[in-house]
Image 1 (cartoon, rainbow, N blue to C red):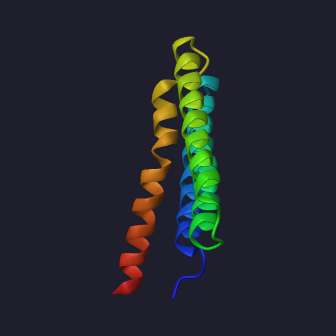
Image 2 (image 1 turned 60 degrees about the horizontal axis):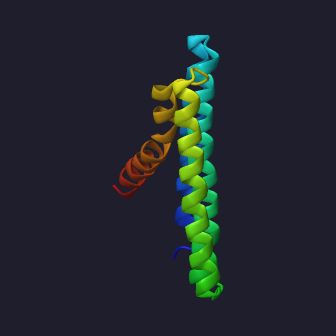
Length: 124
């Protein structure tokens, strides 16, 4: 039986591991825009997961107020939109690499994929 938010926590751990690998790998390019792109994309994903877990656990397990939770979700989406828009602006200005930023954002997919593969191997 899973405890409160345990599956989200394991996915967060996998995403953090993948983020460290990608940000560390970006250092091999010796380029500040590539490093900043990978770092900012990874940080957005990690912060989004932490905030999402907090909202979901409050809503499902602690009986949070639905209006407050809905407002918090809307605020989260607006802040994420602003951050991603800002990162695209900075990539256009040349301060960070857009491809590295997108690779940093893909750490969510790669972390979920890694967790699925690990769970599959453990189940056999």
